[in-house]
Image (cartoon, rainbow, N blue to C red; front, side, top):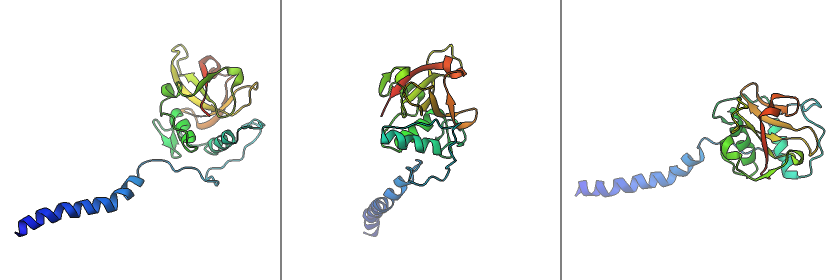
Length: 185
């Protein structure tokens, strides 16, 4: 009788423990926290690092502000948190913070949203590049546009050479690696 009672009570106790503790376990998965109005890594924005840009889309403005607050975060292969990012992990993290789910892959991000012309690039658009070998015309790097349409394209991205930083397309190696602009917002 005691053996049967133990066989009945044991699964009930295990089920009760799962019900009690599973939500806490699931809430502790490895995901970066969403941004708040205060950023711990806020750096002053200077004219050299941030174009004087009047942003029209408040979501784009917030997204760019958060992305810029992450400047200086180190590059970590496959990283997707403020501890370190790769290029697509950075863009996925920033967009996710504003409720937009994009994959953690530059190739897959190149299929997100709408393709727009280079001249129409606006803050919050994804800018897609080849990998370091410009001859291989496949997506391999991604960043977020911070400049206005018609201006020289400036973007924030996580680079294996310097982590999260701002770069320009024109007059740099990124110009030959440029593939397309994707509008996700």
